[in-house]
Length: 168
Image 1 (cartoon, rainbow, N blue to C red):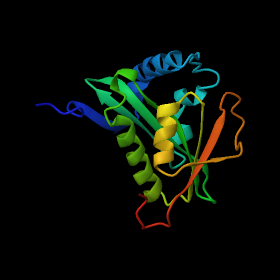
Image 2 (cartoon, one colour):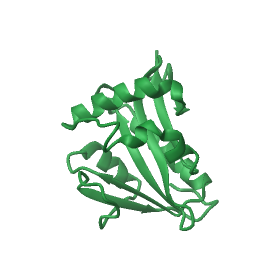
Image 3 (spheres, one colour):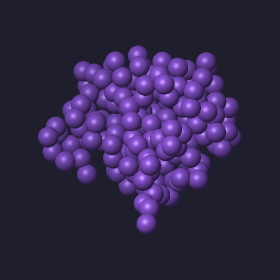
Image 4 (cartoon, rainbow, N blue to C red):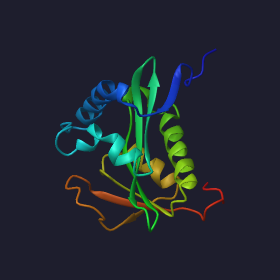
């Protein structure tokens, strides 16, 4: 009997995944009724190392047979106040409902705790019901708009536990 996680691996982004990551994001944005713009609104996708990794965050890819099926990014917004942001949180529709989104979220939360972040923020759309349910499950609450994302409709925040204590 196979489990849904067999042949899957959760890995930190490296440039060898750039093309497959962009193909994945093209699918995800199209699925949601938007155009993927890697030179516009989503230009961070072509500069992951500098925007996420060098700043103290990271960007993870869930891969199955070398195909990207999920992603999540942890961007550091403010190092002094220890505020991070969840970015590009997606799972291919055919893999949703199998625990992959939860696995990605838990991995990010563990890393946020290791980085001693105090607050995690995110923005999302009203129609992203599955993702919003996951955010609410982990205790994210709606807040006022904190960024200049013109597309986002909902802004959320999670106050993390003090360093060293469990998140969940």
